[in-house]
Image (tube, helix red, strand yellow):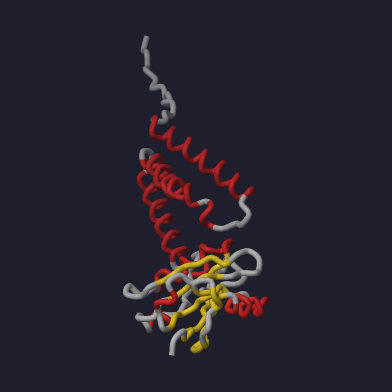
Length: 225
């Protein structure tokens, strides 16, 4: 009797390493966080989902590594496709948030480093000071003051009595242009109204897309002749 041996094609069970399991758990948690934030966030902006972006970037690499154990060609093609996708999206400036090419190279008040600058923002938008920070002069003195929520504003300018002139930069809302004049008239030095002439007025457009009034307005106030 001739007995022929048959080769049995037994498929090995697909095993997932502990590292891969952890990666999938992190991916699932990131997706849940992403969905929850997009639902409850008041503004749909990139900064709310930035905490999970590193994990979402790692996941394609983990997936390609898993594919590579079975087919190196498919893994190589997937890697090239991923790199090409990153390069393509990086070249699309319209998809990059907070990229403003229309910003000024420098502001008027930075050209006069010996004159101090007072920046006044409403309390709810003090974060706008960050838009001015990259343009500040290292050798110039700056004071940041808050504008009260309601009039009378009575904005005191600290140490202004020590200067012959100062630059005043105020948050500006074009729809309420008269508010700027009210704020300027409310400036005080040591509790007394500012007595000085305003000259060299200028406007600044910070170019932000997240606010409907990305403007500052100001000028140089001559305190002593």
